[in-house]
Image (cartoon, rainbow, N blue to C red; front, side):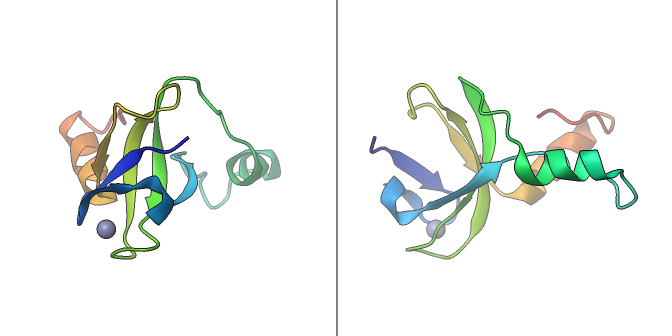
Length: 98
Ligand SMILES: [Zn+2]
């Protein structure tokens, strides 16, 4: 299925210019046990509906950014830098919103 993705640096482009990396997950602590790291590296939620994902603008500005995408229709999303996610998290008294 083809759709457009909004690079925060370049604007809307065909999804064929991008590489999907992964859904956004919280990284375990350095001393987390083996099962937590296995979960983080190998397993995905693969939600039906909205999720926040890592994307790379491979054929454009080479930037890595986050996109909130509805996996059911690929049409309703917003894109932003990771730093914006950190800033928004801090606004909610340290409680993460993803
Ligand atoms: Zn770009």
